[in-house]
Length: 223
Image 1 (cartoon, rainbow, N blue to C red):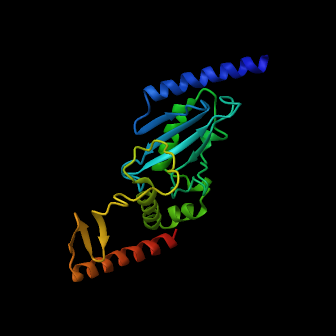
Image 2: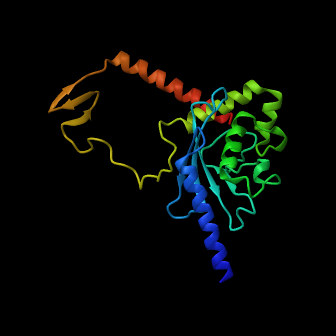
Image 3: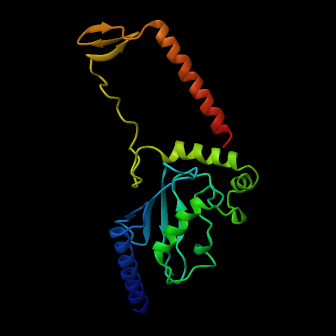
């Protein structure tokens, strides 16, 4: 009975704080409360200007354990990011989520601290040792790596809201339409084949695409 009352009190406390956050979120942060589990909070943090993360939207998850608020929540980046204080599985290392935690700090303080971590990384408590080393020894290379991953993983024109993956491969547009299918080098439209690209133009475009793919593979092998 005591456990049930305590858990009910905890849920009310969490619901109140999460509702307040959703109604008035910190600047640059969006809140997506879980409909299935109130103790799990999804957020989207905008990359701060003047950092390698600018222009990106980084999805993150906060898990409130059974001991919250006596114990700190656990934070995970769902969007891949190159950062000294973010591990390869997305786990976040920041003092406010560890030894500096106080029950009265609240979730708003946690979110603001994590956003500040994008502006001022702490190489002394690095989970990603390579990122921490580059931050100290070669900031230009660190910023280049962080910016590349931001462009690849955090810039997709999405709002940052949690999305479910598509179930299986999606059918191609116009698949099975006899009036809109490719025949050889031409496009068949209403039964008439049209050759909309010259051979020289196609060859040039192929070379450009191949070069872009090669450059991108080289960059990804460095990660």
